Amino acid sequence: MPSTASTDASDATAAALDLADATPDTKVQTSRPWKVAIEEAVRASGARDGTYSGRSQLSLDFQYVQALGSQFVVNFAARYDRFDPLSSQAESHRDVPLVKEGYVSWHPSSLQQVDLGRINMRIGAGVGYNPTDFFGAGAITTDVPPDPDSRRTTRLGSVAVRAQQLWDTGSVSLTYSPRLTSRSLPGNPDASSDLQRTNGVERWMLLGSQRLGATVQPQWVIYREQGEAPQVGQNLSVLIGNSVVAYAEWTGGRRRSLIGRANHIDDTAFRTSSSIGATWTLPVDLSLTAEFQSNGAGASASQWRSLAATNPYAWGNAVQTAVTSQELPSRHALFVMAMWRNLGVRGLDLSAFVQADAGGGRQYWAELRRRFQRFDVALQAQTQTGPAWSRFGAMSEARSVQLVGVFYH
Image 1 (tube, rainbow, N blue to C red):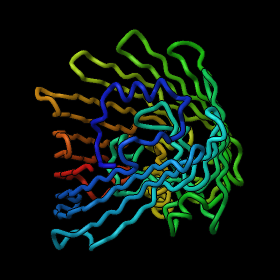
Image 2: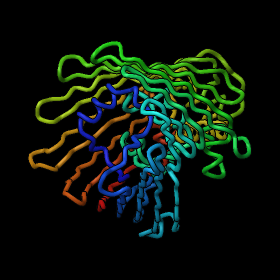
Image 3: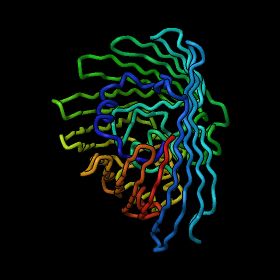
Image 4: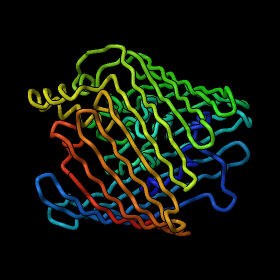
């Protein structure tokens, strides 16, 4: 769907509290089974070397959900992006087709479901960083905007089979994703195809949740990929009063560090990752989120600085792997986000966030969006700062401004 961070606070709260529903909604709309969004964006960028460039991006996003009888549902989602240069410094023309999802759901009963095909499996209570979102590695392209909403909706699903059992207060599901091409670890920046990005190794995931109270619904995860030790995780969110949702996301297991994984170095040890934060919703339709992030597989600022100086090739592999894996490269980081809907005028939304890696770089992103009945107009700005060895400082684009128009049908 279109690039936007203007999801309101109620959506974020509902997502945090309803962790049992980790599967896509397969209810069929009574009006029509398909949705289309056409987006045109014009972008002006400033590089670190002082040059400027411009490009246009035409995007077509298509979704289709259709029931076949009483027990089967077809789900399909695809996106097409066309990039054209608007200056001599910009990249050449590119066409990027992407089949995000394509699977069939079988419902033998109202409490059972089996899915088969390319499936998007999005989990996690965190907003800026999701260590339990294991199937997110390799699912995001570099052209997707950095805001959390875009990264959760514009991503590539994995070919898999998933079985789910529901009950009144929880659910359990088992997902198996086979290796279908030459071996490639999830998040490998050198993956040569969409299939290799998602199905380069055999993977499985067991996911369960159980409601323990009116506002408490923990979720437990066990994940394993071929050749690696199992990883366990938990998601938890709690409603505090009527306006604050506190959440925690944690995973742990024996695994290599980010630098070791990217450069085929066996430094396996027990490591944990977490995302702990809270979202406060004010009566004026403003929500504020603060999140503390930690990754035991990341590296300290001194380690990144030393690696960049002594082994630039290994440093480059690790930075690229961090980006494509949606992994936190630093040991600790802070994420702060604000979303203000109906800012003075109904349909006018302001969104902004800051991602600050400890000892490293920072990323700033802001969007002003005007929503109408059938289309949106948005102005987006992005800035990335930091030393050359950090993930944000290593990016060639230092700043950008983008004007976006989206038509919905």
